[in-house]
Image 1 (cartoon, rainbow, N blue to C red):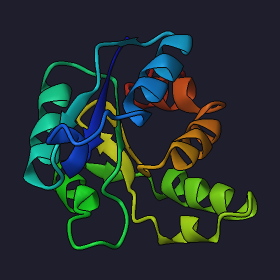
Image 2 (cartoon, one colour):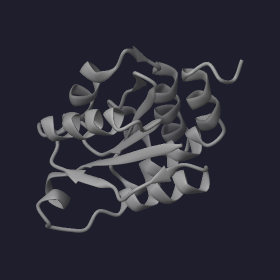
Image 3 (cartoon, rainbow, N blue to C red):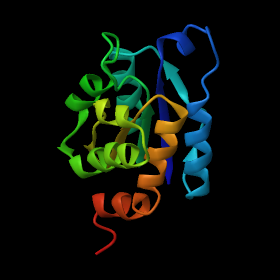
Image 4 (spheres, rainbow, N blue to C red):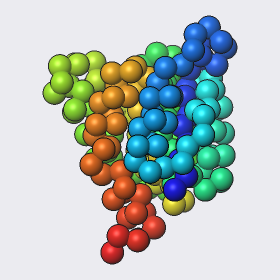
Length: 156
């Protein structure tokens, strides 16, 4: 199954520093049987929407984003994601925030990340920090295959 990773980072997209979260996610996806190319690194905002839409259009079963979910004026990933979703899956985003808070990271509750279904693709916004990504992947670990299969009805 095909998957895609979209990194929302103005500074990484500008070459100020190398992204470290995208490779973490692509490695995790590979461990779970997904075929995933290199992360797509884009500035926050509309480029995120375009990258997610392209991945959905190319048949990705999962699109995981990282970054742009906080409260700064440039954090626009949820706004870029929401119009693409046919249905939201709020339990995933809520579980990611709760996991971070329970792990002793109170700022996890400030993430505005979304999760939902676009066509037959599961889209999940993960935070931009390495710790936030690891927490999000820990939450997704036991349910990712089931969720992806449920979307197309193949688990019934």
